[in-house]
Length: 192
Image (cartoon, rainbow, N blue to C red; front, side, top):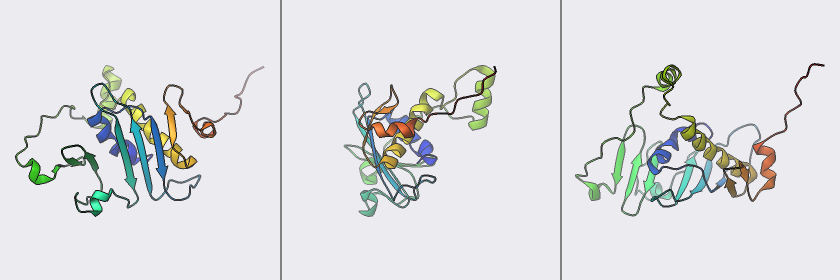
């Protein structure tokens, strides 16, 4: 999740205008202090945003998939994002999008794209350096996205649901999280 989460959670973050989570909880195999788990299930809760309702977001990896896949209600893609709404679902990855159930949406006209096409990672970075224009995934966007991933990792490592305080970067209900969130650095050098 720490690596691919920044890519796959990008889809719901853009589409649903997500920011920082209220809570995160995760489950997987026993925690190893130096490596990521082979499989992980993580759930976040996000607050309402303007006229958009609160959102529950779930991450599956390591062969785990939503029950809808096993029930054959959703195609079994290798990877992607499933948006579940009141009137249907969207299964999406970076190459294709499918409205489900397909027969309910036959003839649906797709809206025009609202996110500008990227010049590419390196070209965007160089353009930002030369002009001062922000990249598509500038720090104001990417920071909360990665923060959400890391709060999920924190919940997994501690084995409990985290109530997140994004202002103070603390787990409100879990003081033992402080040792993972921040560490004490050794004193630096000084000249006499």
